[in-house]
Amino acid sequence: MKVRVHVSLKPGVLDPQGRAIHHSLEGLGFAGVNDVRAGRLFELDVADSVTDEALDDMCRKLLANMVIENYRIEKVAA
Amino acid sequence: MAFRSAVITFPGSNCDRDMAVALEAISGTAPYRVWHGDADLPAGLDFIALPGGFSYGDYLRCGAIASRSPVMRAVIAAAEQGVPVLGVCNGFQVLTESGLLPGALLRNSGIRFVCRDAPLIVENTQSLFTGGYEAGQVIRIPVAHHDGNYYADADTLDRLEGEGRVAFRYAENVNGSARQIAGVLNAAGNVLGMMPHPERAIETAHGGTDGRALFESAIKGLVGA
Image 1 (cartoon, each protein chain N blue to C red):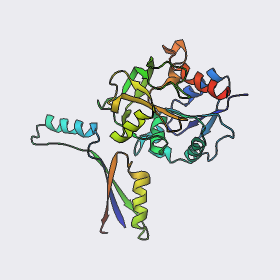
Image 2 (image 1 turned 180 degrees about the vertical axis):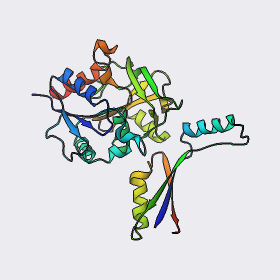
Image 3 (image 1 turned 90 degrees about the horizontal axis):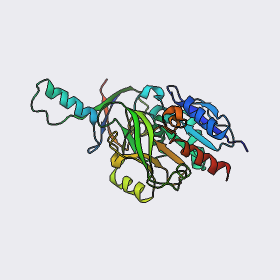
Image 4 (image 1 turned 45 degrees about the horizontal axis):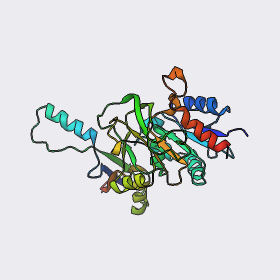
Protein backbone atom coordinates (compact mmCIF):
# COMPACT_ATOMS: atom_id res chain seq x y z
CA MET A 1 0.00 0.00 0.00
CA LYS A 2 1.31 3.44 -0.93
CA VAL A 3 0.64 6.20 1.55
CA ARG A 4 1.40 9.88 1.28
CA VAL A 5 1.81 11.91 4.44
CA HIS A 6 1.53 15.66 4.01
CA VAL A 7 3.07 17.66 6.84
CA SER A 8 2.46 21.39 7.05
CA LEU A 9 3.09 24.10 9.61
CA LYS A 10 0.10 24.96 11.77
CA PRO A 11 -1.62 28.23 10.93
CA GLY A 12 0.03 31.07 12.80
CA VAL A 13 3.46 29.43 13.03
CA LEU A 14 5.98 31.69 11.30
CA ASP A 15 7.39 30.14 8.14
CA PRO A 16 10.59 31.99 7.16
CA GLN A 17 11.24 29.52 4.33
CA GLY A 18 7.79 30.04 2.84
CA ARG A 19 8.31 33.78 3.12
CA ALA A 20 11.66 33.57 1.31
CA ILE A 21 10.13 31.44 -1.46
CA HIS A 22 7.29 33.95 -1.76
CA HIS A 23 9.78 36.78 -2.03
CA SER A 24 11.72 34.88 -4.68
CA LEU A 25 8.59 34.21 -6.74
CA GLU A 26 7.84 37.92 -6.69
CA GLY A 27 11.42 38.58 -7.74
CA LEU A 28 10.86 36.36 -10.77
CA GLY A 29 7.94 38.55 -11.73
CA PHE A 30 5.04 36.27 -10.74
CA ALA A 31 2.23 38.54 -9.65
CA GLY A 32 -0.75 37.64 -7.53
CA VAL A 33 0.90 35.21 -5.09
CA ASN A 34 -0.72 36.05 -1.76
CA ASP A 35 1.17 33.67 0.50
CA VAL A 36 3.49 30.63 0.45
CA ARG A 37 3.74 27.99 3.17
CA ALA A 38 6.44 25.33 2.85
CA GLY A 39 5.72 21.78 3.96
CA ARG A 40 6.91 18.22 3.53
CA LEU A 41 5.66 15.20 1.67
CA PHE A 42 6.52 11.64 2.74
CA GLU A 43 5.78 8.71 0.47
CA LEU A 44 5.54 5.46 2.40
CA ASP A 45 5.25 1.97 1.04
CA VAL A 46 3.71 -0.12 3.81
CA ALA A 47 2.27 -3.62 4.16
CA ASP A 48 -1.49 -3.86 3.71
CA SER A 49 -1.68 -5.07 7.31
CA VAL A 50 -0.55 -1.66 8.64
CA THR A 51 -3.54 -0.11 10.36
CA ASP A 52 -4.79 3.48 10.21
CA GLU A 53 -3.99 3.72 13.93
CA ALA A 54 -0.38 2.72 13.26
CA LEU A 55 -0.08 5.31 10.49
CA ASP A 56 -1.48 7.96 12.82
CA ASP A 57 1.02 6.89 15.45
CA MET A 58 3.91 7.18 12.98
CA CYS A 59 2.87 10.73 12.19
CA ARG A 60 2.46 11.79 15.79
CA LYS A 61 5.63 10.11 17.05
CA LEU A 62 8.03 11.04 14.27
CA LEU A 63 6.90 12.40 10.91
CA ALA A 64 5.25 15.51 12.34
CA ASN A 65 6.11 17.62 15.37
CA MET A 66 2.66 18.20 16.84
CA VAL A 67 3.84 21.40 18.57
CA ILE A 68 4.20 23.17 15.24
CA GLU A 69 2.86 20.92 12.49
CA ASN A 70 -0.32 19.26 11.22
CA TYR A 71 -0.40 16.15 9.07
CA ARG A 72 -2.74 14.58 6.56
CA ILE A 73 -2.62 10.94 5.50
CA GLU A 74 -3.56 10.09 1.93
CA LYS A 75 -3.81 6.51 0.72
CA VAL A 76 -2.81 6.21 -2.90
CA ALA A 77 -4.35 3.60 -5.16
CA ALA A 78 -1.66 1.19 -6.35
CA MET B 1 33.32 12.82 45.84
CA ALA B 2 34.13 13.01 42.17
CA PHE B 3 31.60 14.67 39.92
CA ARG B 4 30.07 12.09 37.58
CA SER B 5 28.92 13.61 34.33
CA ALA B 6 28.27 12.33 30.84
CA VAL B 7 28.38 13.98 27.43
CA ILE B 8 26.23 12.28 24.81
CA THR B 9 27.56 12.13 21.25
CA PHE B 10 25.20 11.64 18.32
CA PRO B 11 26.37 11.18 14.73
CA GLY B 12 26.93 14.79 13.69
CA SER B 13 27.47 16.26 17.15
CA ASN B 14 30.35 18.72 16.96
CA CYS B 15 30.43 20.51 20.31
CA ASP B 16 30.74 17.36 22.39
CA ARG B 17 34.46 17.84 22.92
CA ASP B 18 34.02 21.50 23.91
CA MET B 19 31.37 20.42 26.41
CA ALA B 20 33.63 17.70 27.82
CA VAL B 21 36.53 20.14 28.15
CA ALA B 22 34.31 22.65 29.97
CA LEU B 23 32.97 20.03 32.38
CA GLU B 24 36.45 18.71 33.13
CA ALA B 25 37.96 22.18 33.52
CA ILE B 26 35.34 23.23 36.03
CA SER B 27 34.62 19.98 37.90
CA GLY B 28 38.12 18.52 37.81
CA THR B 29 36.81 15.20 36.55
CA ALA B 30 36.54 14.14 32.93
CA PRO B 31 32.97 13.26 31.91
CA TYR B 32 31.99 9.90 30.52
CA ARG B 33 31.57 10.00 26.76
CA VAL B 34 28.42 8.16 25.77
CA TRP B 35 27.50 7.16 22.22
CA HIS B 36 23.95 7.59 20.92
CA GLY B 37 23.48 3.86 20.34
CA ASP B 38 24.18 2.97 23.97
CA ALA B 39 21.00 1.87 25.68
CA ASP B 40 22.35 2.53 29.18
CA LEU B 41 24.03 5.45 30.90
CA PRO B 42 26.81 5.03 33.47
CA ALA B 43 25.28 4.51 36.92
CA GLY B 44 24.94 7.32 39.44
CA LEU B 45 25.36 10.29 37.11
CA ASP B 46 25.27 13.79 38.59
CA PHE B 47 24.88 15.60 35.27
CA ILE B 48 24.12 14.85 31.62
CA ALA B 49 25.00 17.18 28.74
CA LEU B 50 23.55 17.07 25.24
CA PRO B 51 25.97 19.00 23.02
CA GLY B 52 25.57 21.18 19.98
CA GLY B 53 26.05 20.10 16.40
CA PHE B 54 23.96 18.76 13.57
CA SER B 55 22.87 15.33 14.75
CA TYR B 56 21.85 13.11 11.83
CA GLY B 57 22.52 16.01 9.48
CA ASP B 58 19.39 17.77 10.80
CA TYR B 59 17.37 15.27 8.74
CA LEU B 60 13.58 15.45 9.18
CA ARG B 61 13.79 18.24 11.79
CA CYS B 62 16.72 19.42 13.91
CA GLY B 63 17.11 16.96 16.79
CA ALA B 64 14.21 14.78 15.66
CA ILE B 65 16.12 11.59 14.89
CA ALA B 66 18.53 12.00 17.83
CA SER B 67 15.61 12.40 20.23
CA ARG B 68 14.38 8.90 19.24
CA SER B 69 17.81 7.23 19.62
CA PRO B 70 18.37 4.47 22.22
CA VAL B 71 20.40 6.62 24.60
CA MET B 72 17.64 9.23 24.76
CA ARG B 73 15.29 6.73 26.38
CA ALA B 74 17.84 6.46 29.18
CA VAL B 75 18.32 10.25 29.29
CA ILE B 76 14.56 10.82 29.53
CA ALA B 77 14.29 8.27 32.33
CA ALA B 78 17.21 9.90 34.20
CA ALA B 79 15.71 13.38 33.73
CA GLU B 80 12.41 12.16 35.12
CA GLN B 81 14.28 10.89 38.18
CA GLY B 82 15.75 14.35 38.68
CA VAL B 83 19.22 14.03 37.16
CA PRO B 84 20.23 17.47 35.82
CA VAL B 85 20.30 17.64 32.03
CA LEU B 86 21.78 20.54 30.04
CA GLY B 87 21.05 20.72 26.31
CA VAL B 88 22.92 23.33 24.29
CA CYS B 89 22.00 24.34 20.73
CA ASN B 90 21.29 21.04 18.96
CA GLY B 91 20.98 19.59 22.48
CA PHE B 92 18.14 22.06 23.14
CA GLN B 93 16.48 20.95 19.89
CA VAL B 94 16.82 17.32 21.01
CA LEU B 95 15.20 18.19 24.36
CA THR B 96 12.18 19.85 22.74
CA GLU B 97 11.82 17.03 20.21
CA SER B 98 11.95 14.48 23.02
CA GLY B 99 9.22 16.27 24.95
CA LEU B 100 11.43 16.99 27.97
CA LEU B 101 11.00 20.70 27.25
CA PRO B 102 7.99 22.47 25.72
CA GLY B 103 7.98 24.29 22.41
CA ALA B 104 10.00 23.88 19.26
CA LEU B 105 12.91 25.58 17.48
CA LEU B 106 12.10 26.93 14.05
CA ARG B 107 14.31 28.30 11.29
CA ASN B 108 15.74 31.72 12.28
CA SER B 109 13.30 34.44 11.26
CA GLY B 110 16.00 36.10 9.13
CA ILE B 111 16.69 32.77 7.31
CA ARG B 112 20.43 33.15 7.85
CA PHE B 113 22.72 31.15 10.09
CA VAL B 114 23.61 33.38 13.05
CA CYS B 115 27.13 33.10 14.47
CA ARG B 116 28.18 35.75 16.97
CA ASP B 117 28.25 36.71 20.63
CA ALA B 118 24.76 37.38 21.91
CA PRO B 119 23.87 39.44 24.98
CA LEU B 120 21.58 37.45 27.27
CA ILE B 121 19.51 38.62 30.21
CA VAL B 122 19.52 36.17 33.11
CA GLU B 123 15.82 35.91 33.99
CA ASN B 124 15.86 33.17 36.61
CA THR B 125 18.62 32.98 39.20
CA GLN B 126 16.96 30.35 41.38
CA SER B 127 17.74 27.31 39.26
CA LEU B 128 20.58 24.85 39.64
CA PHE B 129 22.08 26.18 36.42
CA THR B 130 21.62 29.90 36.93
CA GLY B 131 22.22 30.37 40.66
CA GLY B 132 25.65 31.83 39.97
CA TYR B 133 24.25 34.84 38.15
CA GLU B 134 22.50 37.94 39.44
CA ALA B 135 18.90 38.70 38.50
CA GLY B 136 18.78 40.79 35.35
CA GLN B 137 22.51 40.39 34.75
CA VAL B 138 23.48 40.71 31.10
CA ILE B 139 26.03 38.15 29.97
CA ARG B 140 27.66 37.52 26.60
CA ILE B 141 27.52 33.99 25.24
CA PRO B 142 28.23 32.86 21.66
CA VAL B 143 25.38 31.64 19.46
CA ALA B 144 25.83 29.62 16.27
CA HIS B 145 22.66 28.24 14.79
CA HIS B 146 20.27 28.20 11.87
CA ASP B 147 17.23 26.95 13.76
CA GLY B 148 17.08 28.76 17.06
CA ASN B 149 13.80 30.59 16.72
CA TYR B 150 11.95 29.45 19.85
CA TYR B 151 8.26 28.82 19.35
CA ALA B 152 5.49 27.80 21.71
CA ASP B 153 1.81 28.72 21.74
CA ALA B 154 0.74 31.75 23.79
CA ASP B 155 -0.64 29.65 26.68
CA THR B 156 2.63 27.74 26.98
CA LEU B 157 4.66 30.96 26.85
CA ASP B 158 2.49 32.51 29.57
CA ARG B 159 2.91 29.40 31.70
CA LEU B 160 6.70 29.39 31.24
CA GLU B 161 6.90 33.05 32.20
CA GLY B 162 4.51 32.64 35.14
CA GLU B 163 6.47 29.71 36.53
CA GLY B 164 9.84 31.42 36.14
CA ARG B 165 10.97 28.87 33.61
CA VAL B 166 12.51 31.35 31.18
CA ALA B 167 16.16 31.02 32.21
CA PHE B 168 17.68 33.37 29.64
CA ARG B 169 16.31 35.94 27.23
CA TYR B 170 18.16 37.58 24.34
CA ALA B 171 18.74 41.25 25.05
CA GLU B 172 18.19 41.93 21.35
CA ASN B 173 16.41 40.13 18.53
CA VAL B 174 18.84 37.41 17.43
CA ASN B 175 16.65 34.88 15.65
CA GLY B 176 13.01 35.85 16.02
CA SER B 177 12.40 33.76 19.16
CA ALA B 178 9.04 34.20 20.84
CA ARG B 179 9.48 36.79 23.64
CA GLN B 180 13.23 36.61 22.84
CA ILE B 181 13.52 33.39 24.82
CA ALA B 182 17.02 31.89 24.67
CA GLY B 183 16.74 29.15 27.30
CA VAL B 184 13.97 27.36 29.18
CA LEU B 185 13.71 25.06 32.20
CA ASN B 186 11.40 22.10 32.72
CA ALA B 187 8.79 22.24 35.49
CA ALA B 188 11.06 20.46 38.00
CA GLY B 189 13.99 22.75 37.17
CA ASN B 190 16.48 19.96 36.47
CA VAL B 191 16.43 20.25 32.67
CA LEU B 192 17.74 23.36 30.90
CA GLY B 193 17.78 23.86 27.15
CA MET B 194 19.44 26.90 25.57
CA MET B 195 20.59 27.88 22.10
CA PRO B 196 23.67 29.91 23.21
CA HIS B 197 26.87 27.98 23.99
CA PRO B 198 28.08 28.51 27.58
CA GLU B 199 30.83 25.92 27.01
CA ARG B 200 32.35 28.33 24.49
CA ALA B 201 32.77 31.04 27.12
CA ILE B 202 34.75 29.53 29.98
CA GLU B 203 38.30 30.79 29.36
CA THR B 204 39.61 34.27 28.63
CA ALA B 205 41.07 32.86 25.40
CA HIS B 206 37.47 32.29 24.26
CA GLY B 207 36.91 36.04 24.39
CA GLY B 208 34.77 35.85 27.51
CA THR B 209 34.08 33.73 30.57
CA ASP B 210 30.40 34.43 31.17
CA GLY B 211 29.53 30.75 30.68
CA ARG B 212 31.63 29.60 33.65
CA ALA B 213 29.06 30.52 36.29
CA LEU B 214 26.52 28.17 34.73
CA PHE B 215 28.81 25.16 35.14
CA GLU B 216 30.20 26.35 38.45
CA SER B 217 26.78 26.79 40.04
CA ALA B 218 25.51 23.47 38.72
CA ILE B 219 28.61 21.57 39.82
CA LYS B 220 28.82 23.29 43.21
CA GLY B 221 25.10 22.74 43.76
CA LEU B 222 25.46 19.05 43.01
CA VAL B 223 28.72 18.23 44.73
CA GLY B 224 27.85 20.35 47.73
CA ALA B 225 24.46 18.65 48.07
